[in-house]
Length: 114
Image 1 (tube, rainbow, N blue to C red):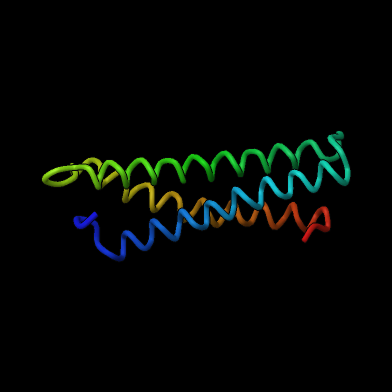
Image 2 (image 1 turned 30 degrees about the vertical axis):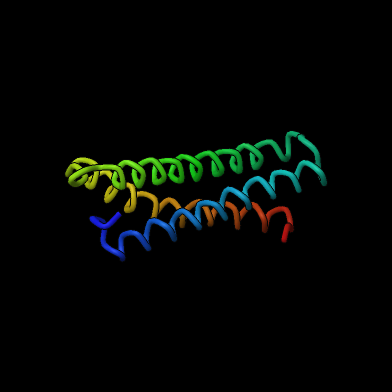
């Protein structure tokens, strides 16, 4: 990916790492809630939120993987449309990662999970 700056590569890889942690945390806390409280009217909303968090994080992770593969394979260089999509995806994901982490933290606190 020589055509991507080192800084851009670092940002994307850090975002992917954060997204993996979010996927792990969301599924881990879903499991804990189900194990401790079951699927009840009281837990259903939070379980659905955690499922949504996991799906959104997975979507961004997959998008970055696909874009990085496309850019790496593009010769002689990636299209401006692909690079623009990567840039937009970075901006969107940065805000989304913060929101997803906040949702997980709120649910953790509500259920007293660690």
